[in-house]
Length: 216
Image (cartoon, rainbow, N blue to C red):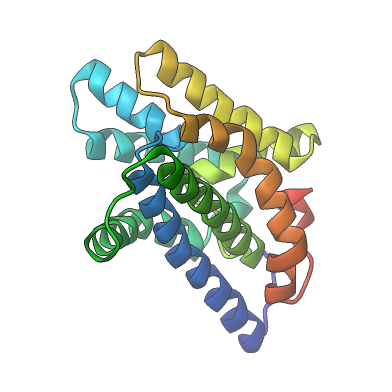
């Protein structure tokens, strides 16, 4: 992160980061409601939990700890308040919005409705990732993997994101996990969409370019 931030700049970044975390919860909630498959990292965690017969929440904690170690030892500068807010808050926020949306609007009943909800979820997830990453106040353990890979290999971020998401999907598939259309769309689409939203929205809200060590 930046070594020096004015109070005004920090508060602006904090607001953008928190907004990103909240709408990320909405995106995850929509994605779950669509019933079109889980995002790649969630699909992997569910597949591992089912294979070794351990509760999803415990596997998620273990995987987050593993991913955090990668972030800690290879790109410690990506760790910040946003790392832990994302880590511990997205799940409860997603569950809250999933219940509220299901109760207020209902769940999609046909394929067209499910596809529309899924597309909305993917776009919101991408937008939210762009916001909280560009705010540069800390990156969640799983999201840090593609950033670490991009920084170390000098390969563009969206290719690295496609790679890490695709690896998760492949492992989940070979473990017998449930892979849906939404899972594949996330694996191939989040990277390019995050890059797009970073350039045309997040950087304008934060007021400066994304940190080169993160997205380029």
